[in-house]
Image (cartoon, rainbow, N blue to C red):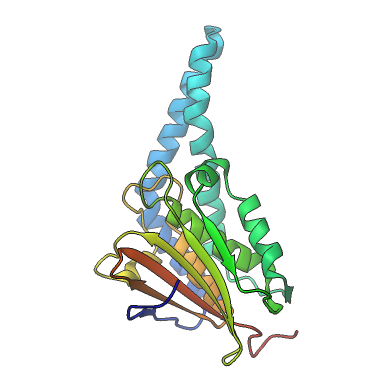
Length: 247
């Protein structure tokens, strides 16, 4: 993913305090309330159909109800988990981090429906990548949140996604790049605010806000660019070892 266009810096203020995070989660809940209500209604509808199918001993309707119920129940669970995460600023647990292990875990933990949608995903890494001193779990979540957001982009038959990890020894920082075919909104900053994205099927509305939160905690930065070939690229820069790291 060669850089060809001017990047827009997503301004990275200092990571919020516990009180600020709690206030932000309240605003997020207000912004996402309609989205959450719709999913709850779909879960309730699926449960009612399932109950009727069991009472009438109708396997066909039971299968239909489960196809509606289970994905939405999974989505509701992820929204609640993300809201809980967004309401707190948990301390980092810094440790040596192996990128190849981390990327394998990211792909392993993607929900089955998302994995199918991202069937054209390709991960590229420098060989070899030096070890990083990072919070393994938060970086894993950060990458997963980007992929969940990207899963809502593109066509239903699977959107080609490129993900790449590079290391720059001059600045002692890693670059994680995520590219997909698409168009940025007029205000790219809005992508990193809690919101119900149009046509969302996999995201929770908090995927990019949480990804930014984890980058902030690692004293990194995010840039985004719209390229002339029709690709949107997210560029995440992370220091190999943040100044405050105990590694």
